[in-house]
Length: 296
Image (cartoon, rainbow, N blue to C red; front, top):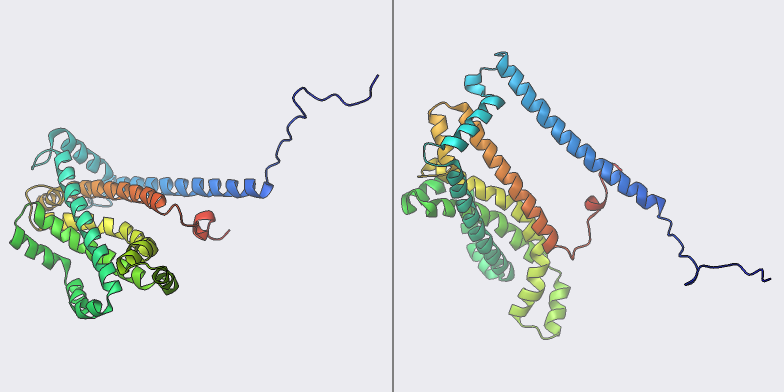
């Protein structure tokens, strides 16, 4: 009788891989960190809302001037059911979002084009530089008033104001991104026979993409601000007009309710922008802040 070990049919049993304890500990730390952040955010929200409600309930703060969380919810519920003075609440949200998104698109496209153009042509940058800085220094509310005079109370004046706010944010980042392109990459492309346009499209623009996308987070918020300020100056519909009307009626809960809607829109848009950024920059190696937490 043979003393050879008996093995299962089909070959030896597969060996189980032992997971690296350091990797497990790192994942656990990341998971705990995210849970801590989420708990801190929820706790902060509860403390602020509960404290605000208690202060107004016991008349430590005057509800007429400070409003109250419960009063804000009642005002939002009333708007959702019966609408605002200018129509459905959802219509006001849509009008503001339409103005902000159109202004965002116009501002981003024009900012990228001008940033790349002036970054690649120093002569043009020197000629137009003082005028761009001068227009950038003008108060935006003045520009909004001019756009209302020129374009009326409709959609175009709000889009133009939002586009101007977005333009300068994107322009300066695109301009700096183009100026920061590695000149060795440009020289290598020229040696390989690339034309000026091919160098810009295949080397300069991809190299400046990180700068441009980084500016979009701020630009998106500015587009919403531009739309709201434009509506506040003069409009027929929109959340800015709702805020102005609530202010004129001393409706503090209405002002805070509209501000809450704007904040939720901004947070949602920021989340979508972060998803788009991860997709567009999937080729980029993760930064140190993305793989670890400060203080660890």
